[in-house]
Amino acid sequence: MKTWTTACPDWEDRIVHGQSLVPLAPIFPEQAEDALDVFGNLRMVDADGSPLMADTCRAWVLDLVAALFGAYDEEAGRRLVTNYFLMVSKKNGKSTIAAGIMLTALILNTRPSGEFLILAPTKEAADNAFKPIRDMIDADEDLKARFHVQEYNRIVTDHLNKANLKVVAADSATVTGKKATGVFIDELWEFGKQAKSAKMLLEATGGLTSRPEGFVFYCTTQSDEPPAGVFKAKLDYARNVRDGKITDLRFLPVIYEFPKEMIKRGEHRDLANAHVTNPNWGLSVDQQVIEQKYQEAQAEGEGAIRGFLAKHLNVEIGLDLRSDRWAGAEFWEVQAAPGGLTFEQLIDRSEVVDIGIDGGGLDDLLGFAAAGRDKLTRQWLLWTHAWAHPSVLERRKSEASRFLDFAGNGDLTLVETIGDDVQDVAELVARVEAAGLLDKVGVDPSGIGAILDALAEAGIPEDKIIGISQGWKLNGAIKTTERKLAEGGLVHGGQPMMAWCCGNARVVPAGNAILITKQASGLAKIDPLMAAFNAISLLSLNPQAQSGLDNYLADGFFGLIGSNS
Image (cartoon, rainbow, N blue to C red; front, side, top):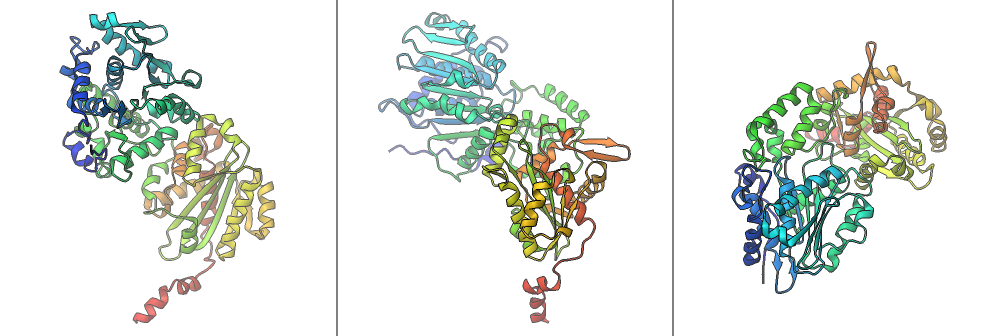
């Protein structure tokens, strides 16, 4: 009985010391040896002297090739490991790897009229993936005689058995009904930005259900925005398999990223450590070029630095920080409460709570924020949520995949019926009121009709509902939030949706004040953040504790002191 594992729990030690991240030795060594012979004799035409792949590829590439082709059980006609995930920094030869693996698969294929597919997110990416295949064939007389290359539609056909390899740009129409034996998904991070990518990739890989020898190879760099959609889902799954949290013997992840401790210490910003996520450092990754790009990014500012780190060092972006960013965004991530912060925990810990509400149009989010003052530490606590009608997925297609992610992790509620959102908001406010903690509810005066009605029906006193002036008058709340974050006086639930909203916020100078408006932020949503500013504008007025000594006694705080005195 063959046994193997695809987990690599010691990856952090391996990657720092330049060791292989492929934990899987070839299950069938003879199959791996045959494939390496084919792969190794292909020529890398775009390198000086057009060397053989065997002479120029480093061990990490050959390990991947051996693992993929060495997982094929020839006797049973079945591949035992069918899904492969590679995330590696830019310029580490992904296009060459794709070309070599897929051409090798086509050469070794025995299925008549078999189909192989490279799916790229754009036409340009598809062209980039096809060119190395074309060049590898042109550089070998035997391959030129065996294969017919149709450059105009990026198809390579095998004269021996009519099998073909197609390179296509992402389009649901091009992949529908495919029965591909092998599929290479290039630049998965870009698919994560497209709402319909999950369905399209399902179509592209559906043929494997009747192709037991088939495989899917996902290849990507890190995203230049916070990961979303199918990319986020696949990356999270790959990390869990790698770390041994999920056992999936048919899924092999290879992820070149910094260990968390190196990120915490800021060592990812030191180019002396660039080799950690660049296994081709000094080969296809030129040190001087990278140093020049980093210098240019540092001159542009933090947003450009993060973009550089994402693409060239595979550092995941948590916030999109541009030059016109909101200053508080720089401190947002570090102020997440350890273990998170739920709405119930905020109520339990607070002596007074202010509520902020913003947004709610059909193509908008309805943002809710509860800001409380901790009865023990006096820290400010912040919890947010948002609601949207499913129509927003059509009206804001560019963000649809992200909204679905937020809905999946509980930060966003997609309501089927208009009005359910304001009812949910009213119920949350009523819970704060019932706890005896509610100070005020601050709303945007331009859109309070339905919200006012719902709050009234929930029994919220009218004198506790006030309009919060927007525009420059919100400047004080914005500045207060910045200072509280910077000094560590405000903690929040660490919700991905709010990190995204903070990254979306764009600052517009207005005299001596600054504005953060939906207009300045464009299509990107900031409604929950605006709701937070509404709540904090009220909490900054230092409202009287709505429950004081009784809460302490209820928690047993003074009772504990008394019993020990």
